[in-house]
Image 1 (cartoon, rainbow, N blue to C red):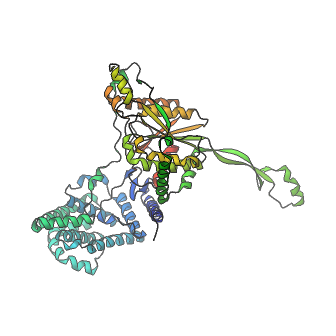
Image 2: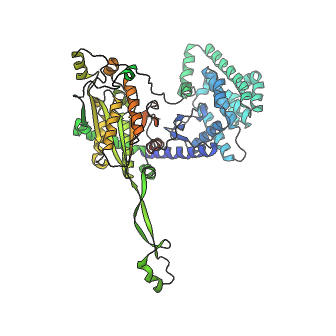
Image 3: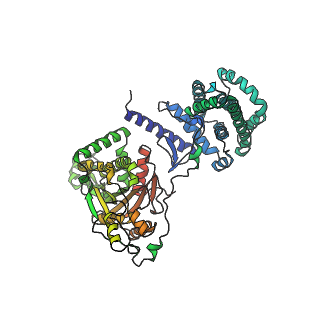
Amino acid sequence: MATPQQLARRQQHIEELCAASLRALTGERDLHYRGKRLHHGAQPVPVHAPHLRLDDDNQDFTAYRGVADATALRLMHSDIDLHRRLCPEDPVARLIFELLEQLRVEALVPKGLPGMARNLDQRFEEWSQDFHNSRLTEGVVGRLIFSIAMICWTRITGRPLDEETGDFIETTRGRLVPIIGADLAGLRRHRQDQAAFAEHALNIARVTSQGVTDAREALGDDDDQDDDEELEGFALFLDFDEDNDEGFAPALSGHSKVFDDAEQRYRIFTTIHDREDAAPDLVRPAKLDEYRQRLDKEIAELGINIRRLAQLFTAHLSNLERDGWSFGEEEGYIDGRRLAQLITSPAERRLFRLEQYKPQANSMVSFLIDCSGSMKTYSESTAILLDLLTRALEMAGVTTEILGFTTNAWNGGRVQKEWMGQGRSKNPGRLNEVRYLVFKEAAQCWRRVRRNIGALLKHDLYREGIDGEAVDWACNRMLGRDEQRRILIVISDGCPMDTATNLANDKFYLDNHLKDVVARRERQGEVEIRGLGVGLDLSPFYRHSLALDLANPIDNEMLMEVAQLVVGKLRQR
């Protein structure tokens, strides 16, 4: 039996091959799979046709290729905006409309690609066989939808049904064809015209939806519930809400009147309670070992190609520097020490030397993690991501640092009490005690402190977050180093948040301070700052940002996209 790691590598290999096929067919360079789902850049590509849904990891490669080929045709021949405008709201009608549009584009296979046609036929036939074998067709509703799918498939593509399927749907077809016969002919006639095709597809979708409604009313409540459960079990009725998802929601920010009107734009009530701690010192050694073992187990099952990641970092974060000479070359500078060989061996050509260069990294990458309460959910994924990136960067010779920021208390702690005791002055500024965490210092190598990264899994470290001061703190640490290029990656799942500060000033006070800090640091040009949003678009705060869904397993595609952000090669969308 294959291990989880082997299965993950197999799935990854299949997805890489399918993504390469999709890019070649469509010409879209940003298509890739992440978490078993196709993405265009950072945006997921919705696939609603039921026969393109693969929920079983044991499917053979042909099934995945069939889905990839079908998706490529959809991207090439379907107008997304037109389809979205015409889509009916009723779930049954929409299901049929989605299926018919997919069958339309699958009928447009270029004549020079017979392998694609075979893949598509096999995928649809396997789906129809699975649908029939699942006993869903024993119910009136399931039989109606199955019959509509089969009738439309054979009419649109011109391919015959097998004898068993034809016999099974014969009675239902006899009832349906007099009603939808004209529209079936229209489907075949208008395969090249999406708008004209859609008129007939919508008519068939409405007839099917009405048929399902009539069948449910005739069956009664109990049988209707059974039908719904069977259909849901086969994942036929899909959740169409994802189609409205245009990506990650942007971080909400606004204007702070307090920040703009104050004579001193950003104030700190007191810094007496602020702390900077080595994160591993806050975790019991035995617990730290347990966390590290947990991370090692998770990382081993991912099958990540660290060397590929390190090569990208080497290519973009290193400069070629002279590293001596290469002797015994057939061209280049004459090597005076070998001239005697020209007399003793006139045919000898290896009399030259060349300057030798090798990549030398003079760069530093610092990761600054928002350790606010909402980040607890992603603590393990964040730790895995940082562990892999740090290893790859150090393989490329890049200096790395892992930092965190939080507060030492909820709702202001001792600072708020002191403010209240002194008469609650107006607009006191930052009103909490900040806490900075050092998980890995720049001078430490990953191998020696790998255990420390496990401290990210200690959830009671996570409280509130004051981002602007943390960015300044991290930048100042980097400026104390000698590296020529400095890159700061801020990892966060939300806006700056401190309850006491927001209540005493206004809710965008900390947001505006973060924008001010980032803008000032960018003008100075000494540190490159980028935002890595966890389920959130951080572009309101960081000019260069990327949003990730860490609810899905980390894979090579995700890591390569983060690496592009680190090196500054991420396409801005």
